[in-house]
Image (cartoon, rainbow, N blue to C red; front, side):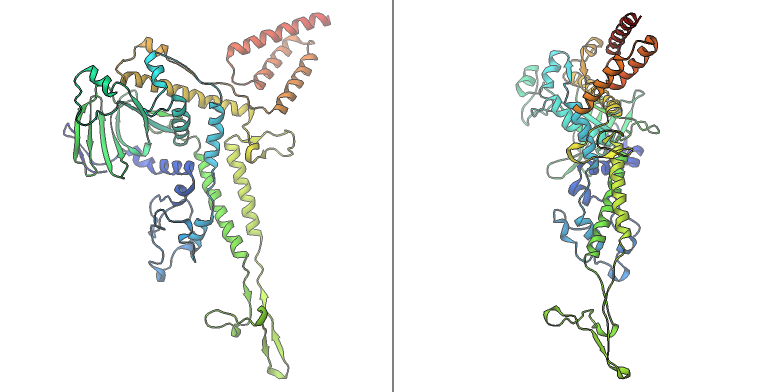
Length: 515
């Protein structure tokens, strides 16, 4: 970042220490979620030999030798070219071009959020807030669209996200003197957006963890970079050299209109989140590398090496082939007898490739387990401890999946409430305690993760157990209550209380009948 002179005379010349420690990790996590060309071409610095550090790890033998200096461009192929641009005689570029990028992170995020947002999210609040929920970003996106397509996936992947709510800028040449001018120009509305963690370069927090001031890196449509400094009263815009371009201007919000929300917090940092899918991203990268090695191995073994007499091979490495692709043998007439030297094909060992395939299957299973996308042991059609699935047959485990989804849903509900509070403050209605109490955002807390066959089997087994009960009512009431909680996780305590009363009533009547 450039050296920036703030309006109060202070100078900023370096990012925040926590940003320096984590910004590469954030970019890598974002690339892992996005996948495709972004994942394949991303560069995370340069190694000791001057070669770019990518998601595909370079083998020792794949470094250019001292005699080949300059043979391969350090920055890789030109931007926007086909992946096969450099896939010639360079094994590394061949692997990078031909290896498809796995999508483990995006699959896990999509599976979890699809379950959460398949249920209705109930919201209630003041009229100004409910009207804003119909167009959150100023471009027609509702709060459901904004959360499900932008905020929620980015939050889960990165572990944190900065949300900004601001009023639109006044058109050039239009003076704003009265409230009527604000309404006429549409400046009384507000729009929400997000700031990626890699662009929140510097900050200062109060005791509650809110921003007292911060510096945001902004990139325009033409790729130009600018820097915007916010504090509780004003904002100032600087160019890429640190020179002031606009401001300072008063925004009138009484606080920085940016909040940092977390999925989980990193324990040893004050303003850094803990990504939920970081382990899956690590597995994805290892799978990507092993898949590339297997592709290179299969490609090499598809063209076997031919081993023959040394004096039969020409200086350029070519072997003469006769008519009809007939390969002649070397004739040896020494010693009074004519003999021929044979040609042999070198057989490649298959153990290494088989090991890679087994390791890939293990990594796929590990990614599924981390995302709870496994069929539980003992289910129909399974024989092992766990069975990985593929395609549309994947589903989330019932018990552990409900716990995970309910935690994510509760986090998203809390974030929406904080966003609503910030929106009310930006719209000019400083929210009171009553206004905050009136804001209701209720995400689902229980999810139907059973298949139809499993649900029918569970209901039948429960009815069988219930029909045989009545000999020890107190013990059976306790055990049946626990069984209901396992079969129907995520409900409110009041619902479970009603189930307990119903079970207790049935067991009491059944005990009287038996007596």
